[in-house]
Length: 249
Image 1 (tube, rainbow, N blue to C red):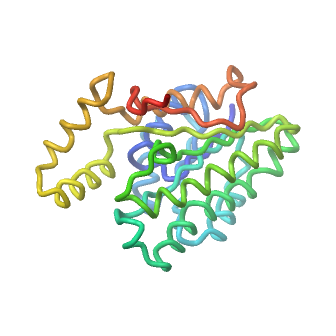
Image 2 (cartoon, rainbow, N blue to C red):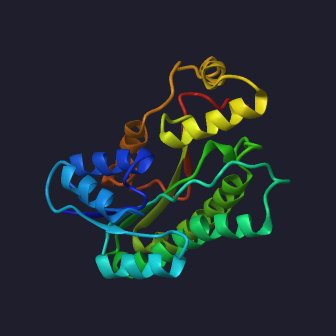
């Protein structure tokens, strides 16, 4: 049985991934800020061997220590908490530091804690969660867009470095996924435009060929594939899961 670690796995995309990995037979460790909530999620997952621990992503060094103490892991979902809305001109230096610390530096600490065992086993799956905002930046989410761009660059460089050990490194770019965070963003957009959140959502839905927002399970199924042996020759890439929302030339 493989051991999988899901960072920020108590709600939204992380929870969807945890459920899918558990359903595929992995023993899943769930992290979150709330120890009680993380334990409840782990207990409710299908299968056996699941665990949890509390983790504050504002302290990257502690993230690495906790991952090392609770590991080793074969599969790691590098998911991080979202950062609040705000434009690039509204973003203070302190806020940018916080975004980089909670996203990039926490991801790096978790990776460094997991790599020794993966290298020894000559097998591992590191999968990041970024955003389609890396392709089309979202002006109202400057902090997270900048930090996730740094995460993407880090993961691409990492893939080149650890491939010889049988470790693959990829990232998923979710589009409009129906989560609490998306509803917060919709509300902020609606307030800024002087409109209702429902009208903002309706306008976006018209631009998605599949005609719906994605679900956390949609992301979970893709991550489960990337974590499997069927994806053994895929590394260093980002895969969009957005229902056709982005339309690159």
